[in-house]
Image (tube, rainbow, N blue to C red; front, top):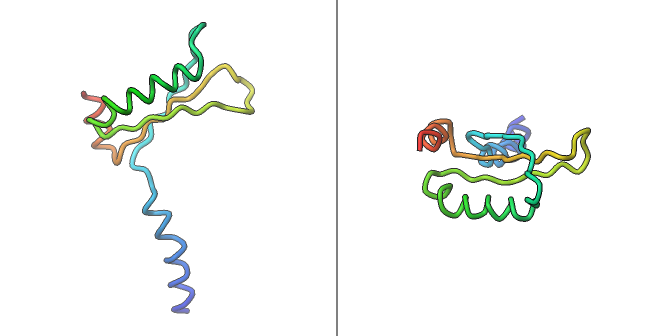
Length: 90
């Protein structure tokens, strides 16, 4: 029984260590003339400047299979809800 418990802890604890505190998911459609590469560059600059100062990291998700393929998703992450609130206030 003790071995089973230790095995369970070995499998579960790494997942808890990688848990994200807060996620912000926003669906967006790009304007004509703006490519995913250009938008990704904007997000990179955002992360480097504003995001780093406020503990916020964003990434772009592009669906490969979906009913609606014209939208992409902005996914922002912070360590916890308090950090998200502080970033939102900024």
